[in-house]
Image (cartoon, rainbow over all chains, first blue to last red; front, side, top):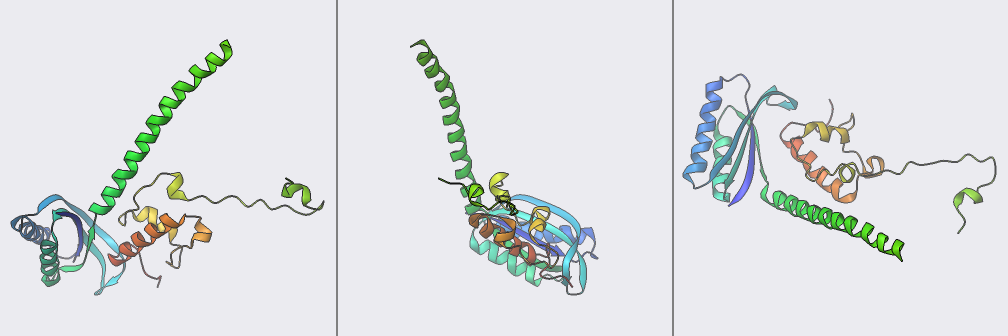
Length: 131
Length: 84
């Protein structure tokens, strides 16, 4: 299982129910294939940075899922077929998350070491002063 | 060791180039997310080109991550490829 983010842009002129329909469809694909949905975020209407198929605005939706490659493939196929979906992108996030965790751990360890070092240092200086 | 300051002949103007530091190292930004348009747009000036390292001062590791993030953001129309 890997973690992915699927972000897609829906035609802003379609109704909200239509977007919900797309979402449930994608959700169905993921859950029926044995994946898990972590988050569905409707990011709302945004201006597109460039024109896509004559659209200047788009409705962004973000899915955060845990799934395997086949499920992602199927999701992408569905998105490609659906007419209101203008564009989509899939990003794998688990490798990045693992790297982040490693950095956090390292940093914590270092902070802990520094704290103990700071405590030890004054004690030593007192000893020196006594001598 | 002699410092550069002493060597310089009198009257010559001194330039202090401010040492550039990597924003991501200093602010401890670990992950450069493609969805963070506010952050990314700091590194794409008007022409929508990616700012070179020699100007922004970003370290090579973070520049690589930044490039990836900007390219992803462009793909999904959060950032533009070029200004019209």
